[in-house]
Image (cartoon, rainbow, N blue to C red; front, side, top):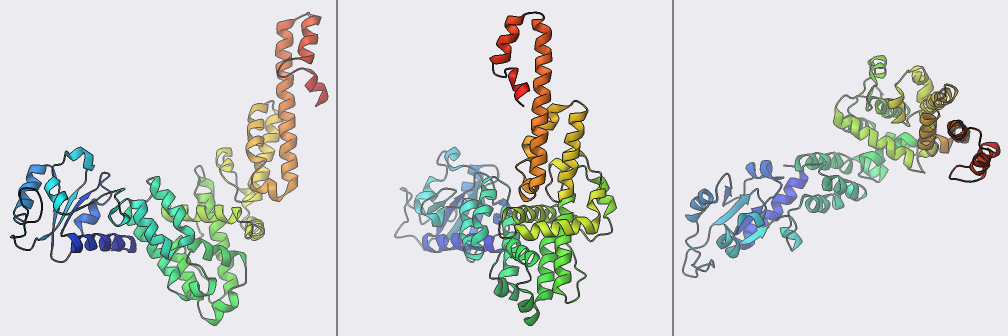
Length: 404
């Protein structure tokens, strides 16, 4: 079992040890596989399958110690330890197991106290607050959205442990794979310590397990950093749709193909761009990798480019696309694109991009206003009074065209 599953098992075992009978309701069936593989010493485990009558028949043989009021019989023998798992909502069961509940304890999502609350977010939070406090909230948010199962949480905890338990954790001061990768990719600060403690192989193995690529660096922090930067940035391109050309062109690179690794890389790149302390290193890395890998030569669909902020070349391509749209008389698309991109990563890093988007936006608005005026002139025909009113009044008065 993984760390999260172990924590859950310990909570359940404690309830069984203290109270003997535990009735476990699991409305979403989140713990079916966990319960199927669970084994508690000296405890009989029952699982609801298709009928409460069948379940009661199986359990009744162990209930001689319960009196007619559903309380432990002082003259009975020592009660057996039972775990009864029901993958249903408690409210829908119409108190079918009320005697068991009265004689023991109920655990379910939202139960009070927290030791009996089996909501997956609560279990995950208790574990990750200890082993990876900087990631705990983000992980719990994904659990709330149904994006992480118990099995996937166990894998995440295992990856965190890989950082937490080794020399890399001591050097970098963090148990987060994301932070370790970004600190190393953005700075040479830890190179000397990594060499002194001979931790480069451990770091390379960490990146291989976490990101799915095998480094060719032989004891060189600089080479490992170069390969990591290239991996993170080039793999982000492969996360998008419509990137067949990119996939074929860079097929010789040792890039990961597992969706799990690609998704993690995409998250790391997003954090890298958003962290102000790492942002200068990102700009430097993106420009360097772009030149090295000739990214500017790629011809990716506009839809794919719109979903990426990886390289400045992508921003330049979108700017040219919008400018060409204006020249071809398609101001609507150009305006929408300018509004979406002008506050993006690269325009904020390189003001000339922001100026060009602002110019495209102004040009698009000008063309759209001119188009509106031409259409209205046809309707108004020779009516000077109406012309004057439209020139000075309305949501978009015509004088805006002269003022622009």
